Length: 185
Image 1 (cartoon, one colour):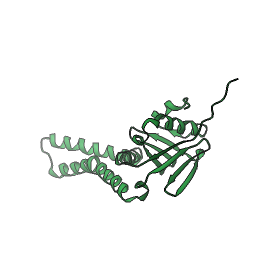
Image 2: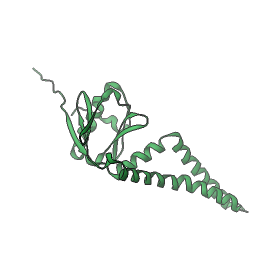
Image 3: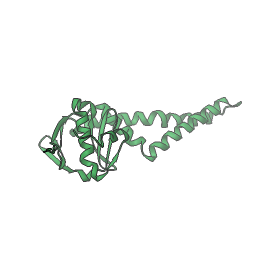
Image 4: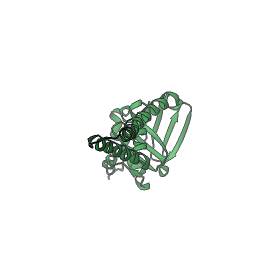
């Protein structure tokens, strides 16, 4: 007689770090229309700057204009976003204390100090992972960010459970999470 193995709860406690939060902020901005347009505008400014400088009679006004557009879009925007993430990390009280995530077959329990919230798996809109974070989106504009470095040896188990528990509700998955579609740990 074959016995079915029922998944059990898996609990992890994590601290937010600058790398994970910065990665989340940058990916959130540059995956939207405004971020993509900022890149195109910056590259266009850079191309016109080079074209203007290579012409026989470069116009100072054009050089300054195209140079400013390129610098604002390609340098200032990312630096501002990085500074925003750093400021959020320092100012937001929820990033100062460890957060406990309990991955249960019925829901995801998130605890911060004495407060806790239970998030039903069908309320997860999207799962996005990168080398430094996993974002569990509950809407297009709200996500719980889990630093990958904090998962340690439990990384594969946690990612597998996230994908498996949400599988029937079909949230959007980033490409690197699709490998966990068939694994059960």
